[in-house]
Length: 119
Length: 157
Image (tube, rainbow over all chains, first blue to last red; front, side, top):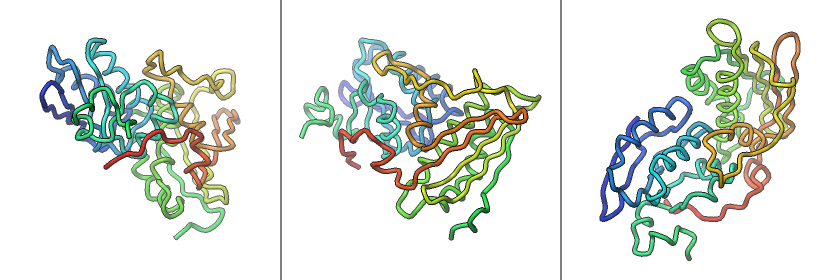
C-alpha cells in the first residue's frame, strides 16, 4: 500500500498510489495514513485520482482516517474517479466530505472552502 | 463475444480474506464480456466484492471458509448473478432491513448492502438445502436507471 505525502504551503497532500482501496487494503491504509500525517497539519487533501476501485471497506477506511485526523484538521478529498464518485453518491457520503475535482483545484486560491461546486 | 444463452460463467472459491480479490480478478473477464459496450464492468465488480466480503466476514462456515459458487448469465435486463455459499444463514433467514447508515454520523461501515441494493435489481435471498442463495440482476443500463442520485459535480480530470 503506497501513500505519498507532499506539502504545498499549508496543505498536506496524501496521494493514494494504488488502483484499489478495498477490504484487503483498508487496515493498512488506515495505519499508513496515521503514520504519514504530520503533526500539526491543519489541512489535508486525500488524492484519490489513482484509485479506480473502492468497496465498502475502503469507503469506511476513508471515513476512519478523517476521524483519525481530528476535528482541528480540514480533511478534503480530490480526484475521485467516476466509479469512486458513484460509491460516495450511492452511500450519500459525498455529503460529508469537501470534494475537489483534482488536487490542482484544491490548491487554487479559494479552493480551501469553496469545494468544487463553485462555477 | 457473448457466451451462449443459458450458459453461465462460473467461479468457485473458499470464503477467505485474500480469496475475494483473486476471485474478482478471475471473474473480471466474464463481467467485461457480459457488460454492454461503454458500460463500466467495475460496477458489477463492486456488487460481487460486497457480496463475497459479506460471506467472508459473516458466514463462518466449514474450516477454511465457506464454499462459494458464483454464476453469471447474460440476461435481457443485464447480468443475472447467483451466489451460493454453505456458511451460516443470514440473520432471520432474510435480507437485512434497508437502513442505510446516516452520513452525518460518520459511519465506518454498513455500506455493503447499500451498495448491493443500489447497484442491483430483483435482489432475492433464500436458504435452501443448507446453503445461502442470493440472486440479483446487475442492470445493463447502470447509468441513470441504477443511480437515482444526480451527480452534483462534474469530475475534472
